Structures are given as C-alpha cells and as structure tokens.
Length: 179
Image (cartoon, rainbow, N blue to C red; front, top):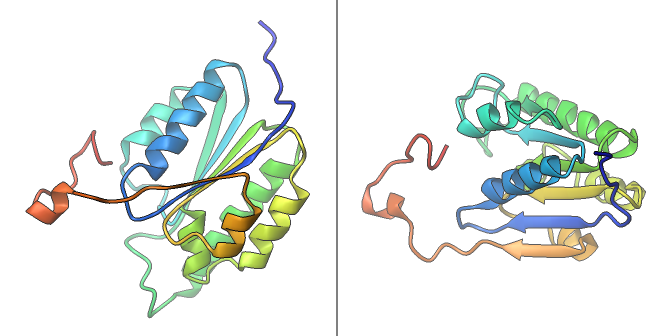
C-alpha cells in the first residue's frame, strides 16, 4: 500500500481550559499513521522521563516520531529558568525542521501555545513557521492560551471549554485516563 500524501495541509489549533487538547492531537496522529502518513509529535513542557501513556501508545505506531522538550516539574511563570527557555527553543527548532524538512506529513506541537504564553517561544517565530509551512503539511498546535495572532493565522480553531471537571470534586488525575 502506497501512503497517500496530503494535497492540502491546514493549521489547526486546539486550545481552551477544557480537557482534550492533547488527546485530540493523539487521535489525529493515530488516524494519520493508520493511513500511512508520517507524523512528528513534539511534546513541549514535558520532560523526556515524564510518565504519560500517550508516549507509550505513540511508540507503537511506526509512522510516528516523537520527542519531549521540557524540564522536571512545572514551569513557574514568575520564575522562568534558562533551561525552560532552552528546552522550548530546542523543541521549536526540531518542530520547524520537521515542518520544513519534507519527511513528515503531519507535525504536532503539543503545548506550544503554553510555551508561547510563558514567553519561552516568541509568537512571531510561530507565526513565521505557519507562513513558511509547505502546502502539503498539516500543522497542529495545542495548549491553553493560544495567542490571538495564532488563532487568526490558523485554518481551524477549537476551544475546549471546561463545564465540569472531576478535579474540582477532589478527584486527582488518573493514570491511563488523564495521563
């Protein structure tokens, strides 16, 4: 079976305070891989040794390449460390190479909107990447607080809205369901 190539790749943004942004991107990665499309998945703000089930699942898909760019723990918006910036910049460079390199059909930049919001990646760099994206590459950007300029540049934007969440009732994130 010869994999089909995308004739028209779009820019999609999944943002908002509701659950499901990364899950949606993983679903797209799985679907694309099932059709033989090559996928590059960059996890921003997540250390390589962070235990999340999506890494294990993506590892099983031969059409998907993924990398994590982040440090241990959470990024403190009031105390940005040089290593936080360095990791996000490495992730951006790797993602940019994936978008422009001709090897991948789908590039997913998970939590890139948060990296931009935290000032780890300049919004203008992401806008430039969107403008340089080849016609046949699908680009997916996830994370809360998508910049209005990114929203305007995208072809599709979905805002996940949190109406009710178990965390508000004291239920912690559950392995296999939430991470």
